[in-house]
Image 1 (cartoon, rainbow, N blue to C red):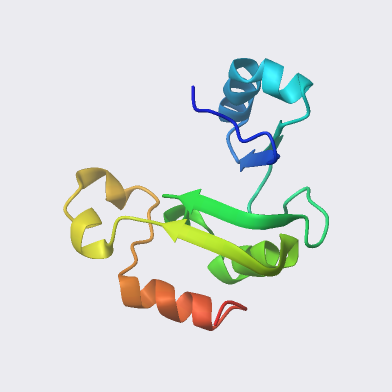
Image 2: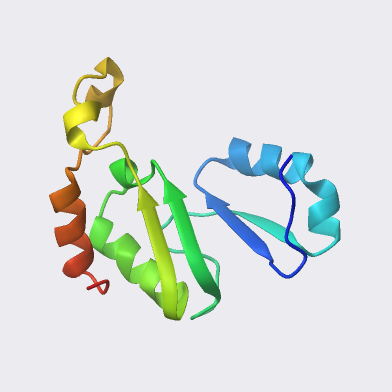
Length: 123
């Protein structure tokens, strides 16, 4: 387990009920302490108030967004002004060599992600 900064509240959202269930089970004390919350949610419709968070970090999820513009609009909505969005992926040049990517993945080069961000509220 990682060390929790006492000044930070963490919120996790996932479209897998099983992942939310496991995260909730594994972090029961942090949830009870009001430091962590997990939500079963689609990234395009997050159960958060406007400007609710100051940082968003997502790893290897962009490939699965049905409509990236909708998701980025939603991330922009829940992110505070001057908040930070970090999207991490493996680039298309690497991912295209994995056999499993033919099953529901949209691959992106760095330039594709930059364009996507610039065209959707994150210049």
